[in-house]
Image (cartoon, rainbow, N blue to C red; front, top):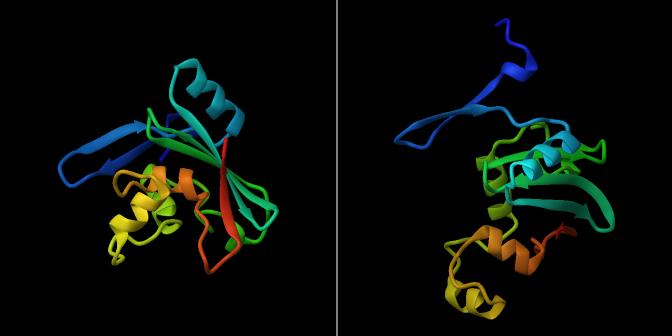
Length: 142
């Protein structure tokens, strides 16, 4: 369409409004520097399979944007598979997939046991490291 990488935008629709914002940088260092210069709340998530670092996720909670860097070539071991430019919604869905299902019976008991006041995948992953019984994948939050 004649647009350079720097001129591209992200469109999102939440059911009520359309949001247009510049695409997040795909360069992790530039993404980090931009977020820090703006005083944004930035968290780094390191996604592991056992002791192998698979993906580094930089999450800007203020701008609701992420930047990823895959550290392995095996697509099935990366956090977002073939999606190399995941959206904020993709990130939240990824975190939710690393949590107990919201519909699980006894959810309130579980939330109380891990010390989370309500179902919030961000908080749950911080408490549980996103560990699941069926795999060896987990998240380190920096």
